[in-house]
Figure 1 (cartoon, rainbow, N blue to C red):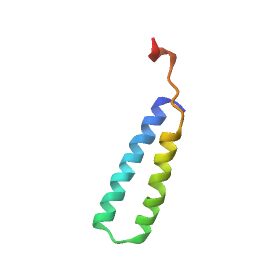
Figure 2 (figure 1 turned 30 degrees about the vertical axis):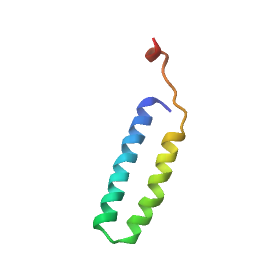
Figure 3 (figure 1 turned 135 degrees about the horizontal axis):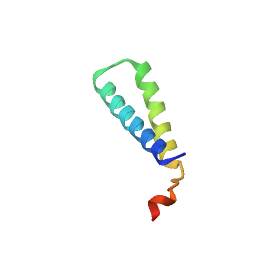
Figure 4 (figure 1 turned 90 degrees about the vertical axis):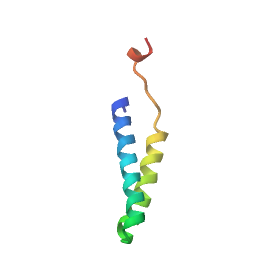
Length: 60
């Protein structure tokens, strides 16, 4: 995966984390809370567990 894909996944993870916190405070629907509580940690783990591949152009 490229650096752009990694940045997009990071942005999506942050957005979902904010959504999770917002729903936890405002909403009381268990479906969304359970969904986000499972999805967000998986995305964050997947995001930070990926090896970082840097292009040779950036090192020059």
